[in-house]
Image (cartoon, rainbow, N blue to C red; front, side, top):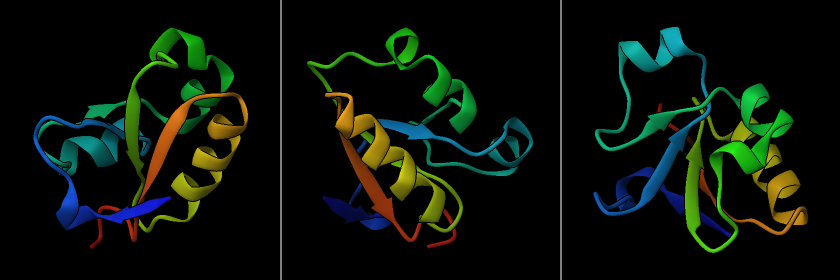
Length: 86
């Protein structure tokens, strides 16, 4: 499942998977930064299977792959289509 960037709400659990430098240049106001390799290498450290998370990158391509992998592991992850550039 995908949503558009403009559909994000302040109460959503939003994760920016870009690197720290890009995150510091600009990000969704209530997002947290977890670079994608950290997230994929140790999802249990950052995620709970009982919660829903919205993940974005810059264009939406990398986040779509991350979402597929994490959902296959039993997490409830939604991709932010077209990413931060949107």
